[in-house]
Image (cartoon, rainbow, N blue to C red; front, side):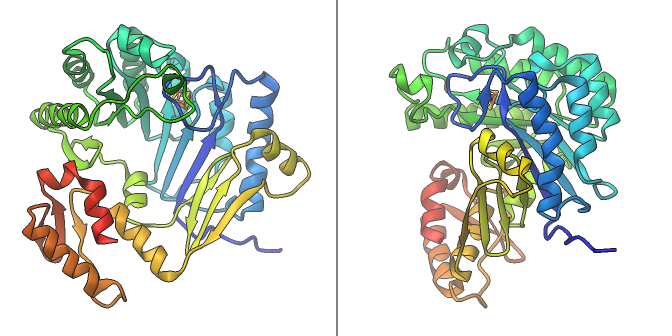
Length: 371
Ligand code: SF4
């Protein structure tokens, strides 16, 4: 029998390219209000892309189903989607992003039966006015009901996403959201300051992004509150109870390879970067014809590849310093020494480093200095 090529990475990302409606801040690729036929085509053709890319027999250690809105296809659709994925390795982490509006006991049961180990709920806020400003299609009641349903179904890990520093939101809205989020007992919380991306409804309406000071104050508030609840800031925007870090995202930040399928999904395998075209119709047409979907391919030099992988590591609470054996090692070690004198990084011993509190505030500049 002809052997199919095996996956060259143990981390798989699946992009579900649909949403019920577009949130006002969203710059991710997703098609709003898909027809039932579009969703059915996506579920039918996903295994074909996995097969053509040599991923059908992979045994990934981490699977991350994101989007878009992976929960939009409902319990039966999610069952089909999870059944279409390669069988994960024993002990693998399988994460699925969920919109609280879609989560019912039946959907939570479908996730559990499908082997999902981690549910990531896009709560964004518990303040009804903030949720309306963001154009979310759920209220705080749905977030609480979703968390209860996922816990009752026995999903091992629960993560909640929050958006901070939303312009015009009521004073104290973030504090209330943090309190309500932690009261639901998640294992993991992500807090991202709002970003106003070009072309989004927020940008078109002239909403000004939060100032650096407002964003930093919101992040400091989140860090301090979550620390008091036992959540460590293990990445710039991510907090977890010990051992509950997202293994898929950790692998990406640590510079490991990952393979992506679905429209707009990205991959990093060796020196090659691949970005599937953000175009569901083109993705479907290619796979119907038995071809790989259109994608942008780029092959990096060894130096650029190493620099990219090093840069994302610096986001973590603990990262390995430069390798003196690499061509960039000596220059990077000198930059690190200068950043240490400036109070932006400090050594943790054993060749590991961390950003200081001030370094986390200017993390982009620190990464630029290092790479
Ligand atoms: S649910 Fe997520 S992907 Fe969909 S529009 Fe909202 S932010 Fe974007």
